[in-house]
Length: 322
Image (tube, one colour):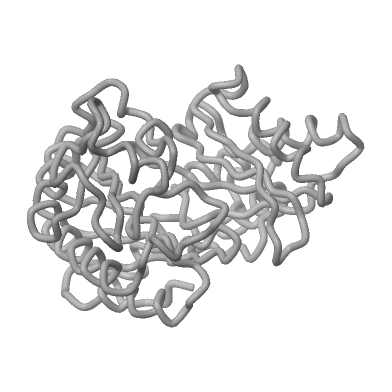
């Protein structure tokens, strides 16, 4: 049963800690750490791993143990919403694995870490047992600080574990979902209010693009405003449409797009759809079509190995993954 998991951890500044968290993931056999991305402004790191369900679950448990040891949420600050040291753990089906398989895995894993670590665990997305917890944003309402005061109130308690926050690690959301693309567009502007206005117009909840979540942030290390997005279904709303829509909205204020970036990996099909939009010849080698896709989106620090299938194939064969 081949699966992907993309745990998000509330640490993006102490890179020595991030190294130890990555080491915990890789400490056992059968799991492939395909990507890791850290962001200082968000104070968050994203790990992308894949493999058979057993080794992946074991690696995630090691990650949770390491994060509890390394991260104290009482000291945590950052731009990105969060509820715990390991903020979110999604299970994503790959190959012949079904969504029902991942729902079962997510629920079993959530109970497993709640029991071992005394963590409050909230089930979300396809694994949710309550309709008001399908959206991750609803689970995160109030963030760590708000949930800390509300977790023992009616309707705010966890699915597994105690109705109180872990004293240092907070809580964790565990779910099952389709492939999500974390995609950011950096404006050639320092106007964070513009980024927030664009985010409100582009996200589905504001009447914008279907299956898109968005928010606006200030990115200190770039000196730019950013529209940060999750694409929940790239077949419904492709990357190229998101880029073009944000470009048009920014242009209304006379602002250009500086670049975009992927957090983690994306399916090969998502890149090839952009290559088609860019009129890259279909008979070209896949690497050339990927390069055309990256140029169209002005992707920063792009590598063909950001295509999930290419990265996993390289990792399983022992070849280079960068």
